[in-house]
Image (cartoon, rainbow, N blue to C red; front, side, top):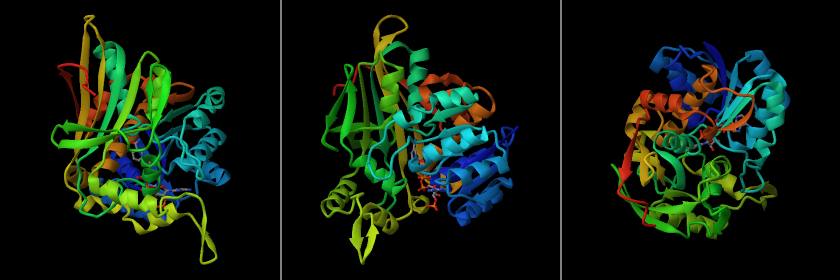
Length: 402
Ligand code: NDP
């Protein structure tokens, strides 16, 4: 029985609070705060209608550490779940330290003026959280999040040593729009247009954005082209599972999405440096976000499934080399029927609820800053099965041919 404060009323925040309200034995008191109070109130109304549970709401600008600290002290939660944007991570961590509460998020810190993310900024809080006896759990979404838990689950139960790990993220959903992103467009486009990086034999290898393409046949979705990308869990997995010789991240994109993105890039609409328009400074990518569909509005029309998982090759418990594929398939329409949000928000919001449950129930604990792969995967994997993201493991005939 614990109090939780969720910050961020987007698609992910919406799913997370709906799922928390379905588990009041763990989340006995829920407050949702965000920049726009009306969005919190709309989610609270949906939660009440779908679950009968009343949650509290509040307005907050989470870039303001003093105001956020005051809100945390007023609400007095055990845990703050940060589902705003990566830009707010450090400010909310500072507020948690000032107010003396645990912290959790789903995406690592990224400065606004540089399309670059890495854990160093948040790992630098290790000593402060440790000294305060508080836990900061980083990246409890699907990727990062579940994909790291999948890796540690395979290592615990199937492979004594993982040699290669490939994370495959496929969204086979169709929202019927010419161009839209499934989560925050600004964050999504910054991520996709960044150079690709993977870890191989102790080194980071950088290649141009979207330059390595591979076809893959995803169960219940079908064949798709996926592209090598950099993703934040590669950094923490390379640190915490240093025996892995190669870690790669792949994401599927349709040709129409890539064509639109190429044009937007060519005409300068994805720039993140300010330009003067009508005497006023604007950031082209932020303006683009304003004219693109809100990801939270895509749910009603999105059909199809996501299929996200890990393929790991290594030395099995019997001493032989084996390859295992562990994955979840999530249906966009089912996700929408349950929470009013499409599967990309669902596959992030459910793990956010589960990460929060791990901390509130004490099944995961510790003082300091932690990534997902440092925790026991078993209780988390149990909750995935019970709360809408069932997974399966299958043995593949051999390592990936690419
Ligand atoms: P949205 O853009 O839909 O929602 C973000 C919310 O945060 C909005 O309600 C926004 O308010 C609010 N917000 C923004 N800035 C502030 C601020 N300064 N103070 C208070 N609230 C603020 O994003 P999503 O819900 O799609 O994503 C949420 C997070 O989840 C992001 O960090 C994203 O990177 C992460 N994510 C992680 C994934 C994973 O698998 N690990 C996958 C997908 C997303 P307003 O409505 O006023 O703009």
